[in-house]
Amino acid sequence: MAHAVLILNSVQAHDVNALLRECVSGSTLDNGNVFALNTSASGVWTATVATGSATDLWMCATPEIPFVMDSSGEIYRVGTDPREFYVPAGRTFTAFKPKVGDIITLTADAFSNAIGGNTFANASAGSWLLTWGASQGAGLSLKLVETTFISIGRGIENARVTAYKLMVVGE
Image (cartoon, one colour):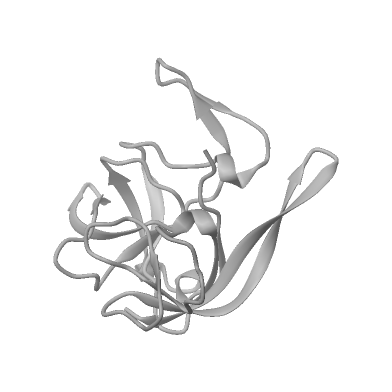
């Protein structure tokens, strides 16, 4: 199973530490997944799927260190393909607060549906994934800037993976 790949092209969180959080979730997450932060214990925030509203959401953005986990829970680093990376439930990860004007790039695995002719990626209550739509949604919403690709090295070959450059237009 491929996991979503996220590139933080130009985000305010690069320069404003208040827009970064250390988090933990009871669910397995990919970079690019969106969620609410409700409580903090010892400086680590609890990420939960948004309920009721898709506003004031955060996004998983942990540096990719591809790994696999065996049946006993032991983690091993593998390869260099960022699509092999995910955050296991219960592990600490980094999140950033998307702000209007931020530009990010995400692979298709970060979305619950295919792009089709849509130009907006919207967060919705009850889902970790963004959803493609024809118009800007209420709450966290990103507008398609361009369809692009991410080069992911696979040994001696170079694989181009379709990706979407997006600008945050609603929080």
